[in-house]
Image (cartoon, rainbow, N blue to C red; front, top):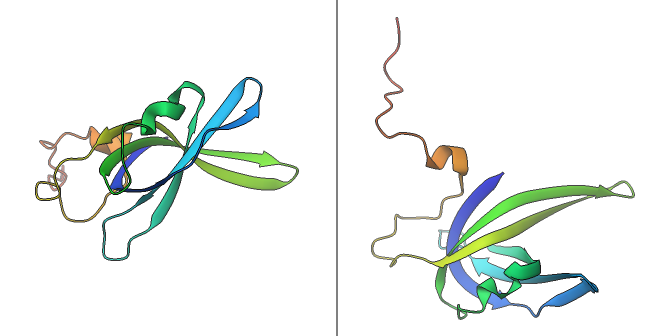
Length: 118
């Protein structure tokens, strides 16, 4: 599942080497809504440097996948970021944050859902 969200970069963490061949890096954004949320994302492998170009406080868009797994009868959920880009100005951005699935992003605006066949 692919999603995207925008917010202000709150904190970047250092790269962590999990094994000799696997590294991760986490970062947190603060959403820009009535009740701001602090959302943590993870970058893996060659994407760990994707957050380097951004400074704390900068508005960014984060594209991510929702990942889940089971380990020893415990369940874990992770937001795995795969693309980060600078957000548009706040003045031109729509009010509030939105979490939009990729299938909703590409829905045609010309579709008329009020047109019933009967």
